Image (cartoon, rainbow, N blue to C red):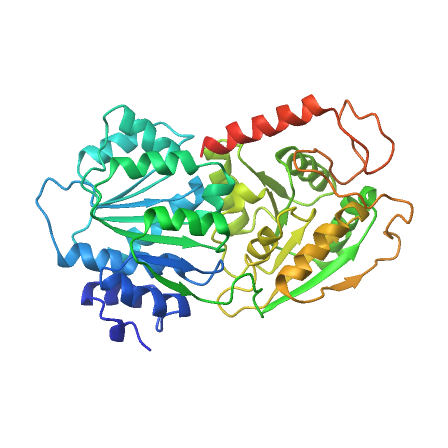
Length: 429
């Protein structure tokens, strides 16, 4: 199938050709036709499958084929969970609409709102936004979405993970009842289907790949290792393997900062990216990672959602996620566009149950290896880490830790403070 056969307009085909794309990806083949027909769509697609073009191309086709008055009210709203994803989607909208009379803009928190407001006042057809900044500007009467014709909810599963359900519901009430709705998610959980039922009207459901399968081009491997030796192992792997571009996942923001400092001290250029970082710092870190001046990017799941890094060769789970679906999303950062990729996970004793759940989810056993000098601790507890606990590799403990075992209890008030702080930071996106 070709892009021409999908029925897209000539200006869009010209923009697609300029970007070097010749044939649509599976998610584009399945999603574009029903969107062009005006149907609501519920789509599931892994990272790197081209899902952004799956909704931006038909959306732009519709807007250009049905022009409105010069005033340019916001006709299409694309809602994303993070700043990085918003910027990425906006870039796609801008590139694909190069030969169309379509104006677009992106708004998100963490930066001065004045330039964003100035752009909105000049008139915008397509708005890409994060929930917090959108509702903030709406509350200031600086924008209106009461004339939106197409609504796109991107990365819906991450939206729910980040606690944006109430914000989504508020946004829904601000738009007209009659509109086309498109919902894209990496997974189809019960909560996602419940949300879909409240947003979509008789939707067409499409999937690019079976739910929660991993990309075939990705080589997966587990290193069993003592928690206190994780930092030494990852430094050895990166240094001796001469890895030039590595995306490393940690469970917490503090863990990302700590690991970044240790890598830098070992002579490996590294940068951390997470919700506590300013937008300027995050943009600088990502730019350095893409141009090669930063060798390792250490990220949390929330900050990494939406990062578009072509031909990324290595992804390392410094810590396994406690949510199995996040593993699939993490490793999907590599093995894109037909390229091979390596996904490595450093697994300590207390992450054993996480590994079992991941293998159950993806339906396969992951190859296990033990590196000499970095053997797992045979006496370590296999009690899983509880969500909210701030335990990182390297043997460091929270200030109020009272237990000597790796599975020891933590002060409940500190854990609650950590959880509440994380939720506040998440909502700043």
